Amino acid sequence: MARIVVKFGGTSVANVERIRQAARHVKREVDAGNEVAVVVSAMSGKTNELVGWVNEASKFHDAREYDAVVASGEQVTAGLMAIVLSEMGIQSRSFAGWQVPIYTDDAHGAARITGIEPSTLDERLCQGWVPVITGFQGVSPHQRITTLGRGGSDTSAVAVAAAVGADRCEIYTDVDGVYTTDPRIVPRARRLSKISFEEMLEMASLGAKVLMIRSVELAMAQKVRLVVRSSFDDPEAPQLAPDGTPGIPGTLVCDEDEIMEKQIVSGVTLAKSEAKITLRDVKDKPGVAAAIFGALADRSIVVDMIVQNVSDDGSVTDITFTVPDSEYEKAVDALENNDSIEYAKIVGSKGGAKISVIGVGMRSHAGVASSMFRALADKGINIQLITTSEIKTSVLIDDQYAELAVRALHTYYGLDKKDA
Image: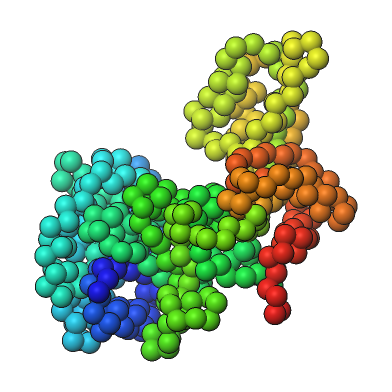
């Protein structure tokens, strides 16, 4: 017997028929003798609809009432899931976040989980019930409903799994696992059977949309093993791992120690719409970087790649960084209207693409970055910026070469399907 938390995203519960399909996956685990708790998102599109209603009612609404409205989407899904499971003969009931309870801080709209009281869920699981819990929400110290913001339902599922001591947390979505790159760009991309928390964290932060960063960070901190799998698979089909052997379908996200053979490069990611900004001849003195990036932080602008080049005499420096295309004008305005920063001029451009190669095996293998640069040079692709870390190397290139670069690197590092 295993204790499992399963989470279904919006596309997996988009209507009642899909909720029934998701419920059949739950029934398979219950019939196998496992203890199962379910975490659900709102039906696809419902959260956006609710947000639209709030904004229509008032542009200057109370954030606490915003949360009260927006949280209702998950409550509908949880109730419907419990009804469907009960119809299948499985004892089930729904739990709103405050009923568990899932405690959060009082940052309405972007709350963070501070703790979960697991006794009620534990009792139900031990009795053979399937609790269905609303994702994306909790209760503040002031007893108000809170929502967790982007990626909240995945985060809820991981937090519940940690609280009840689950053997794994299965994230059901509209894809059947984590791939070496986007299969829409590279049809020969392979589904990974395992990937480390660190690799998944890098992939999530660098453009992969399979899991949200917050949920991976929490899973890594709490040592919660994640499985990414598709809710559209046949629940009655034999359970086969990516290599075709009996096992759990999908991709296991786990501690690096669980992965015996570590590939040098596990994946290639692409993030488009990257803008590059360079401040020329910045007066090089203590605090200048803090002034530049502090001005951007004050405008809530997220900065990504940063490169600094100091002049020979050390008097001035060029500082280059990237921001999303959508933040380009706001970033330039923030710098131009900050009198504490001394520089000659600002130059920049939109339409860049960030390509990254990721792999825990890079820690113990030299030359990965140089081989990446060589592979791109062979395709005539110019590199504008470079950043590295222990397990990744990222480059900024012109957007028109983005997909060519991904395909070239995917093949260069031997990630293509062998039988494709």
